[in-house]
Image 1 (cartoon, rainbow, N blue to C red):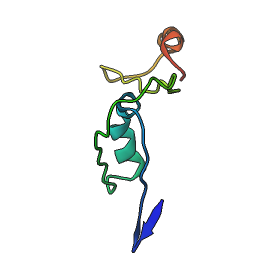
Image 2 (cartoon, rainbow, N blue to C red):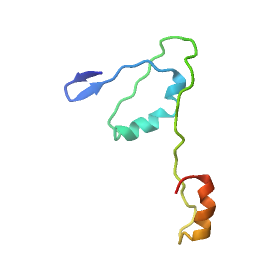
Image 3 (cartoon, helix red, strand yellow):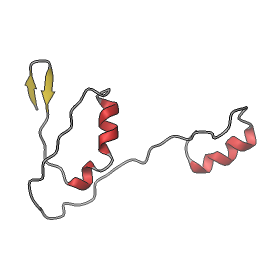
Length: 80
C-alpha cells in the first residue's frame, strides 16, 4: 500500500483467474471511483484454489404480489 495525496495505491500479484469477475465487485466497492489496472508479469506454477462466494440477486419478471407458495418455491434457488 502506498498512500499518495488523497488516494491509496495498492500493488499486488494475483493470478489472472483471481481477477476474473472481480472488476464489477471493485467498481461497487470503490463506488465507481477506483482505477483497476493489470499487467502480465509471466507464468508461474499453480498455487492452489482461490476461494470465492457465489452471490447474486433474484429478480421477478412480473409485477404484482409475492404470494407464499411462490416464495416457498424460490427458497431452493437462493436465500430470501
